[in-house]
Image (cartoon, rainbow, N blue to C red; front, top):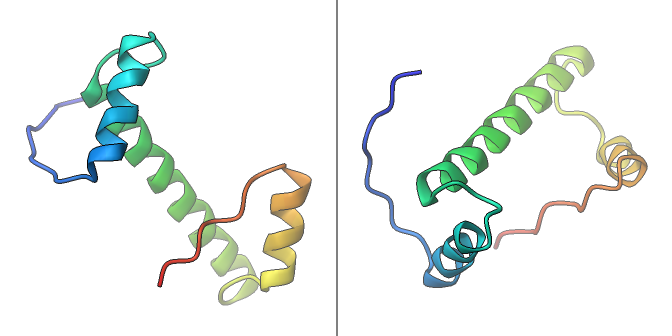
Length: 80
């Protein structure tokens, strides 16, 4: 896959934690860490789009909550 250099601005705490992941060997590089996070978001967005296609709109919140509990996923943090 072709790579492209980009510049992003992140909260300092996030960068510190990402650099720690590189230092402790759980990420190959800061770029790899960020790429993995972007890939996870893209996978989530595609999955939600697939569910919206199946339901003819966004899935009901109670069904999403049940799926998150079943998969032991933490619900997304509310923004606002």
